[in-house]
Length: 195
Image 1 (spheres, rainbow, N blue to C red):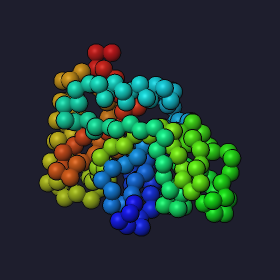
Image 2: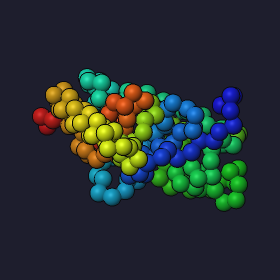
Image 3: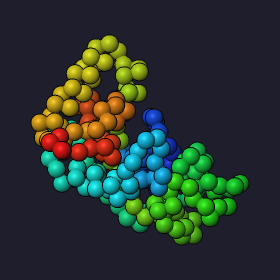
Image 4: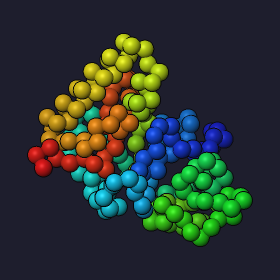
């Protein structure tokens, strides 16, 4: 935050039904906040999502599942949150970032309080930033597509051999590292294969 003026923004990709994901453009991590209300047909609870992330944390990730760091009471400076992020996910604003409504939809449990010019998040996860696989494939050359899809298959095979089933095998739930390795990062549907 001290080396540039970038603002936190919604991460590129398809918006999740369970998590709000945001980042700084030049920062190597994304931040993930569990929403209070999930979209679509999701039947999980907030505690259920936390349990899935804990399952992954304690399990052998076989190099195919992103390491996730968990934080409590994490502070973000309000003036560094983009309008898009404020409107989209964290806090609806009336006219300015400092004019905040009391009603905070989708993140009431996640947002703890405002401390002067900071937004304090009760609970969040951080993961290494990756290129979502579906976005990568949109712009990739045919040989890059073939290599990425092959590695996607290997990732599934290696996770399953470690008794992990991703649940949602959608391409948007996997990402490419800077070394073009396919890694799974969306844990809300994960379970043991034998279950």
